[in-house]
Image (cartoon, rainbow, N blue to C red; front, top):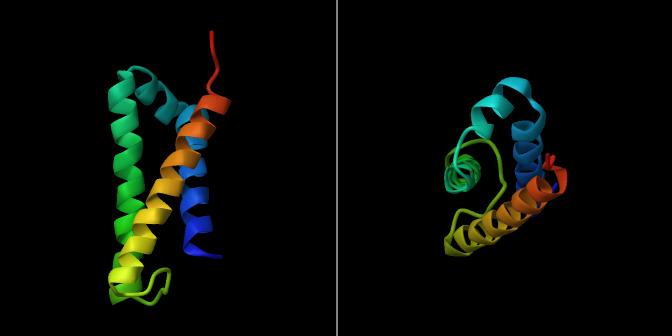
Length: 95
């Protein structure tokens, strides 16, 4: 699995989880839309930073531990954010 695929899957799973997991959904539903977006971006950023950290200091090799690898991580973050927001819009239940 490529880092981009991993990031996109993480973005999709976060969006679906916050829409369908009962405890998360009720907590998340009461937040303003800006807070929702920031929570999602923060979680995606944590996944990205964690992936880079595990690549440089851990047993995994998601990204090359160099400047090029950091730029790859930034690109993967952007792809994950796009996947997250599009999944949220597609799965959101309008009442």
